[in-house]
Image 1 (cartoon, helix red, strand yellow):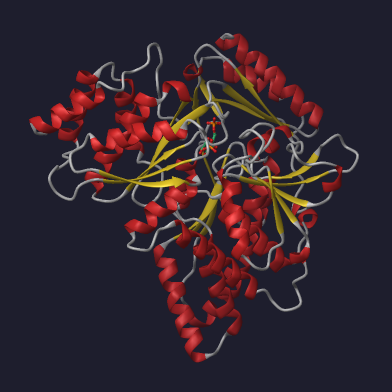
Image 2: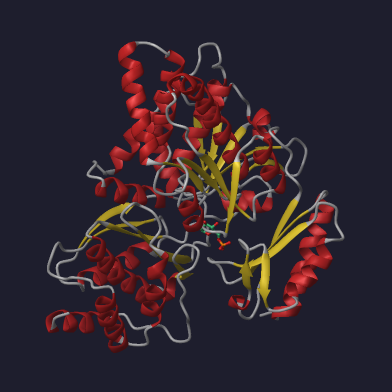
Length: 553
Ligand code: G16
């Protein structure tokens, strides 16, 4: 690294001092904290993004969002060239950069890392796409990111404005693949592939499309984008609520609130009972469905990420079996379909998926883990119960599908196989291949419900969820909780897992685990059992136990 570059870094870093007494860690989804202490972190992630772009010789994404967190929080994360989360190998470097005490130490870390990673300056400069959600703190943090990027000689940033997190990931991926990647291209792809799926619905099975859908947009960026899509999409009747004009982001609204509290979000009332509703989170990377129950004090029937996964899996399996019929004759591709879940997946969903013959894999929480596993399959469907997920298609399988469509289309034979192939291709275009995306997920759910001719109630009847409860416990140091086996077991502090086992064994179908949150300063407790009372009881006794072992704040 030449002296000119070094002095540029020293000068610019001096403008972003590290706040006193905080420790940053690149968690489940990048860095998150109260927005008021994040400037130095975002500046440093700007540097990191530029270095990553030089290293990979590709466009990198930098998103400023704290997703489902409180509006006063913010955060920053990196999207790698394929649109996926930043390689975990760089996370320790991100941690040490974010915590460097002053500009001299920061420079030293960068110099050492550049050497270790053999990052070559002087070739193609860095290019970083920037995006932010609707948080008021986003604008000034974006400036900090720009300063970080421009402290690397030759690096440029492209401001994509206020976008959903999945849109930014999509833009990075599309650009690196040489495709058009403006926001309008994203909308066009979504609208045309939705249209394609609707046009391929077998005649006579339609009928569900006139029932209105109401979308709770969490007062975030998803509402803004849905209003744009609404102007051009046909074949879906929907209304957007909590679009951000009045209410507060994620405050009593949104996918996280609905999934955890199991009540209707603000803005919904008795007139909405029985209607199919969906809920996005603050940056529109999570999606859950629900329907309000009559005379129930805002209680809902929740249709969570596990059920979305099940719906997608059934539809894809159906298309694959149509293709497999033909394969018996043609002896061609046997697509490997698999699903990926986390410990939060309702036990009933995992049983159901296995009973339908699907291969189920478990990973720790965080899309970065699920995404990686799903990429091992020809079609890998991953979802967290909180509604974060997508479907990945391997390039081999897509190439084979393309060939199949050409072959079947030109001979005019095998129209059912042709339709099944076209449906799968449309799904691969509609659903975001980079990361979980509430908007593309929503349009895929809607297309499949129309295809099946299902109401939300029929969909919800696929299986009955086991009652569950989630709690959070504030402790002195959440990093003291160390887990193993996809977070189903605590290995430290010693003794706590044995105590959890004793409590869990008291409840029929009891299951319980604790894990440190990657996005909030809490330990999370998840419990399920055969009755709601038992699940609540188990969760609160394990929360007390956690408090005893780890000490309250
Ligand atoms: C982020 C991750 C999700 C993960 C969630 C869990 O969600 O992207 O994959 O499920 O955090 O958070 P925690 O570790 O706090 O339980 P989001 O929507 O906040 O980006």
